[in-house]
Image (cartoon, rainbow, N blue to C red; front, side, top):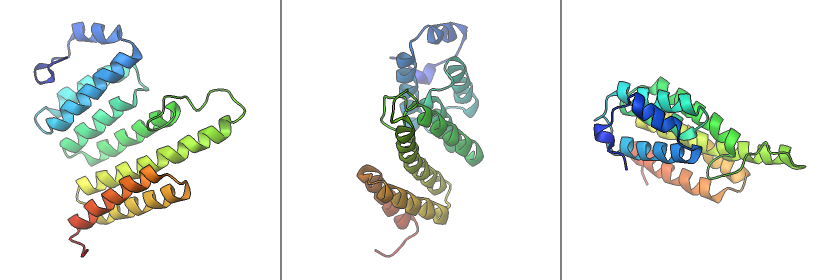
Length: 182
């Protein structure tokens, strides 16, 4: 396991990452995302961003790389950068089959258009919910509430109980932040 607190992204590490499989890169990015979440604000924006750039130069379609960038931007109060990174994250997720999917929706089959539509619907629900979290993080509570309501609407239309549950959890967070009467 890498010690990210002492991590320096040099040429030797770049070579090591370049020889990793896609799955190993994903695992590395997941570890980095966990560290970033735990160490919000303790790493410099530039060092994390340089690391993400290097990782994405090796594999540009790794969604977690874009999520790490979004978390880094949020930790350093860069709302525009975080929104751009979330959009890139969901673009990659759509290409790869959406949240919690190991399939490529573009694979040739008779139901490929229908499958792609289902992926886009699933990704849209999670994308809007992530934007709600982004708005909440930056204190834009009305915008967060609108995004949560949109997530609930999309999830109900598509019968996605998981997305409904997540959205209702976020609704409670937003309403508590707004000091909304119960």
